[in-house]
Image (tube, rainbow, N blue to C red; front, side, top):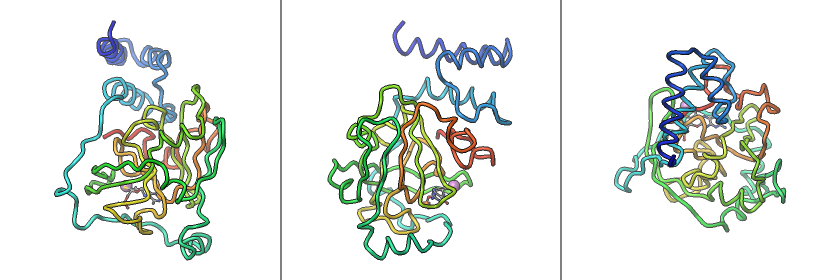
Length: 252
Ligand SMILES: Nc1nc2c(c(=O)[nH]1)N[C@H]1C(S)=C(S)[C@@H](COP(=O)(O)O)O[C@H]1N2
Ligand SMILES: [Mo]
């Protein structure tokens, strides 16, 4: 079977299993192909598994829509964030020279990168839409290091399944699977519309995951952990927001 018909076969199988034979069969197929999201035991469990599994199979090689320069929003909307704390303010006062992105977990060479280090990596950019789950959106150009490049630099293990990312905001963390982590549009962004990020947009570094809703694009990123066991993090649901109604997978 070629890739596409294999995918079609599995997707059809998933849908049929959900419809006809019930959720037990769906779970069995999803497990077999490792297509179970970390929050699959929640209220939206079975539905979340079906959505994630189907979307992954159909779209894992696809790109988020890109726009032209003329479509960039003149007034992008910075969503509300809590005011910065003292530790952030002193890093900001120093021009973020002392900001570090720690990269650890299942990697050959754990590392700690300054923003200058990240700026030395090949600069990638894309003009994409940030879509909030609350209904608003804007188009902007994002630039930074690709997450896949950073994962190569540190030698991420081939058996890794997720990348966990944390923010200097203590309660904010999230994760993506490896197909999104190595996706060419997934950036560790330090620039928006040609200038360094401001506080509102996540300075000095934010995750930018254009294939998912805005809340996956966490601001003030200061640590990445590569893992093969997402259950070890937080409540084991893949992000800080999962459980409060924010589904872990938020594909757009
Ligand atoms: N650290 C942190 N990251 C965050 C948030 C936040 O409150 N704190 N809000 C998220 C949500 S819900 C959205 S929609 C986007 C908004 O991005 P924007 O401010 O660039 O519009 O950031 C996401 N990243
Ligand atoms: Mo949001």
